[in-house]
Image (cartoon, rainbow, N blue to C red; front, top):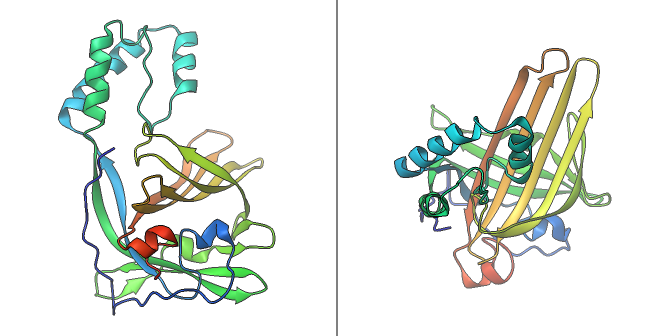
Length: 252
């Protein structure tokens, strides 16, 4: 996917980025500096074209006329953050799907806020998050991920809700943010009151031009199914130097 190029400014004084002198866990050090410094990035979201919106609405109108079984089969194959794959029942005219896919590829990224993120070594192979974003009075405040800590001994993130356990992640060009690979940590728990899912993901694009951090938390009532909490964001960190592309974002 073609991504919009952004210019990024640090939020306070310029953030110094240096090589780490210790061996931080690859699961995080391949994506973020782990030596107490931070790198600038932007919270982003995908923006579709009006052409895509019209073609997508037409597809939805065909979708609602399908059987429940067929709807479920289509839903199981797709995801909201990916280009839908071709289905003959949903697109009887394949040329219409090709127009749909071409319009999806025109998706651009909108920058919502400037941020900075890094990791600090707390000893015993554990790390805390350094983060910040601008506030109205000209100062900065930490992001919600600032409350998380990474335990390299267990490869888990620790939040106020429990431990997020890790696995590998990969996506191809059908993903909103392009082809990329990395690591994802997830925690899911349920009780008589609610169900909760929390996720953090660190990835690098396969072209070596950017690192992404994704965070989300969703909680639903176990009784009504109503969403109690829904919070999340995607942060883009462009890799701008040859040395960073070969090693870590922003580090020389």
